[in-house]
Image (cartoon, rainbow, N blue to C red; front, side, top):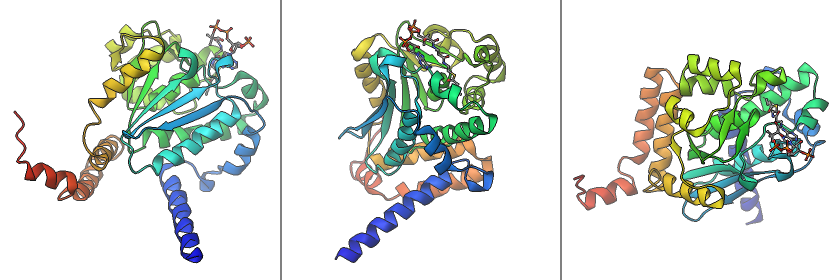
Length: 299
Ligand SMILES: CCCC(=O)SCCNC(=O)CCNC(=O)[C@H](O)C(C)(C)COP(=O)(O)OP(=O)(O)OC[C@H]1O[C@@H](n2cnc3c(N)ncnc32)[C@H](O)[C@@H]1OP(=O)(O)O
């Protein structure tokens, strides 16, 4: 009995490790040493990244460092990575809302930590670590939404581009301030921004470091909706918005996200093949059989 439990958990750990390796961009073959950068990041504590998984299949991920406008400390970067493993293995999950504590989104990386990891080699390691994590966020089999209240600055603006959708509360702003810091985005924000709004609009936002308000964000396709509410009520509003897109079984919702991902990331022929494989996982499945038995009409 004890041996079979041990084998089972060993298989689960191995599956999680393989999954993580497949979903990440960088591993040791790219000169990336995850253990080393985690040890370094652990020296910059503070704040937390809190995950709440709802019984309705919707999770909330809260970036919480309110005394520093939710800036990412080293330990928060590590926690964000750990929460991705938790979400990747959540079979009942359908959706995710990423938001910041205290009615503001996130002011990027903690400037104190950034100062201490200032060598280009360490900067590149931190950048690889965060790109891995945010790529895994983007590739979660969940419909993800960034709820932007207050400010999303620097790395915070990059974080919101890793979600499938962005909802902006009144008076909120997204701002790629990197150039003013003598930087360019490094957490994958530039590449994702170009996919979202095109290279000309992305060029303008990155080179001017302009504040993007909800109305302009909606106009250029950076935001998907301008919410009516501020403070805690905007989280409720975000849940309501998301519920339109997460109806139905987790298996079908997750399959849907996977076909969108393959269409987004793969070449057409490969995406078509992946779509066929994913189709095979839902065809004749419980949700399909139930719909057929009800002879559903779509009037
Ligand atoms: C590849 C990633 C690249 C990056 O993310 S680089 C970092 C980019 N982010 C920044 O430069 C943000 C710098 N902060 C600001 O511009 C302003 O603090 C901000 C966010 C507009 C808020 O302004 P205010 O509302 O006036 O509030 P405040 O300035 O008094 O801030 C409240 C406390 O929060 C702190 N804070 C804000 N952003 C921080 C950050 N990123 N790292 C470390 N601490 C940060 C700020 O220092 C202040 O603390 P304290 O009260 O002085 O002890």
